[in-house]
Image (cartoon, rainbow, N blue to C red):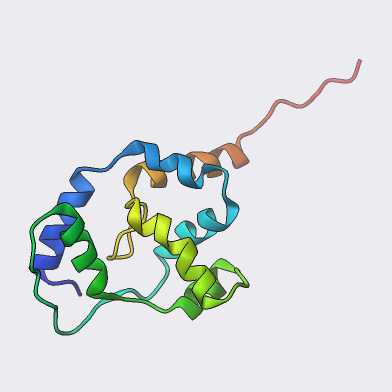
Length: 132
């Protein structure tokens, strides 16, 4: 469960999403895998929140992530990515830094819509070719 202050601060970022971040995952299968499994991870707020010392966007975003915990091992297994933890952490940086994934286990709504549209296209019925 996430505290009221945590949720309040996070909601600010969700209300101010940027659609352009979709481009960062559009042609990157590994980042896409991470984003897809993000909602299925056991992501928690740490028990005792650290003090939020500043009120800039950067400081607030960093504070949210400092107070979040999840397992890189679980992420690797669910995303089926076989890389060292430090490599996975490096791959996570653009997803976190560009606010594609959120520390409550959710995903930027534009990215979520993009992924849903990709899935829908996979299942679209295409007309059969007629042999002449």
